[in-house]
Length: 146
Image (tube, rainbow, N blue to C red; front, top):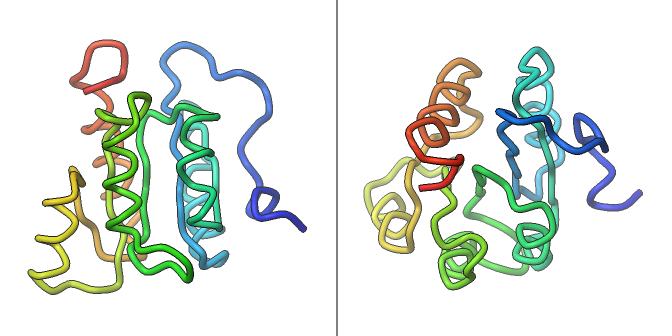
């Protein structure tokens, strides 16, 4: 099973106009499945999942998400470093990043914000709160970009 195959994405067809493409980068497949299920009744959210942090930047370049959900603790690369790498890439320089972390301390929040994260949520986040934050990040921008 590949890291991209589970949990599955909502669809392989191109997203319609007004669809929010979301990429979750988290090595915990159970979190991937929980988040995927949160979006099942959200037809305007197209979900993608990447379990391998070392492949996250390439995945972002490949799918051009409207919002990135980023875990901070990954086995081979620090999630804060990934946020920095997103900000260094033209394609994701302005893509909103919502950090999902089990750590709630101020130092962790500060590190994520200084790296360029837009939002911070303790995981697993409540469904309504996560969807609200995704829509808030995506909605006020022209063409779905900050």
